[in-house]
Image (cartoon, rainbow, N blue to C red; front, side, top):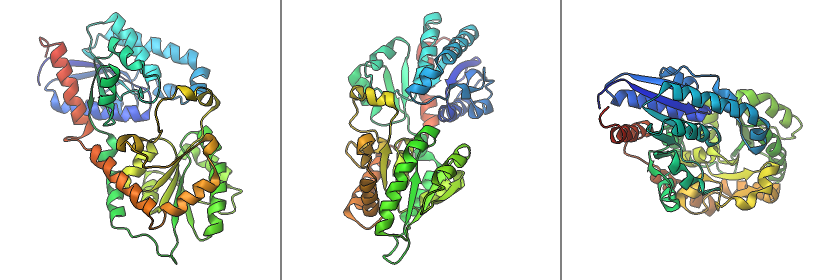
Length: 393
């Protein structure tokens, strides 16, 4: 496609969204024969594509209801600032990336002021989990949704939401995932007289780590009663390293703490099984082929409103496979004895391990696309532009 300069407004509210946005813009530049100008909010990946972010987007990185409430006044001010800047720029298209509490409010304001500007939402909100009425509400301010999970287009059709296209997930193309998957395919389980490796993944948020690590400690104690020769490895991120070290300082059996992406993927390759906080890491583990038990300890507001949550599982591999591949221990059912027994079964040559790995293979198959996610997404964006502004493009 060729044409006049293309002005794109893009809003990403956190690092994962910035990476997706940067990948999409790079693909658009490869496929659009003209100058691409950017305005909006993002981080390193989008700035590498030429965006001058309106402000440091780390202001928007809040997780959980309690954090959103605490920072609501600042978020409202940022919503108004972002929407005003985009409206003044009069872009050809607005692309919002994930972070729906923030980006969707910006999109509504832009649609009200500039009704002819097409709006694309990259990453479908979890309408399949709760507040499914959002799907129909999105018809008022979103023209197309780029989904990163293969079941989401069917969900949006069923709920009467905007047109939705599955463009693929970045993890399927991730070099770490692919390399680890290959290494694990060649790896044999330890023999009875060899040391097993259990990986502990208590999450990346301070509150989550603080809630889960004491439970993980009890599970390690329980598992060590059955096998005291197990090696434990705990990958974490730099900003959380000291917290993790403080929390495990009194453990009798201390895990090996490793920091950084290279160390993380080494741990993924060596682990016989994992104990993990519920989240995207479950999909990483599934695609890499690491058997895992999922744990989830929610904050108090989620516990109060849990009846409004409609999904039957919080584990993405389970949703993609459409059956319970990964066992989940949540809140009151989060018992160290159960975790230890699952880890014992999953780290050995058992039917439970074989069944889980079979489920992971199904997940891998269902997530494949013809082209990389950025290229798939760029094709949809250009198609929407061609249909919305045929005279301009």
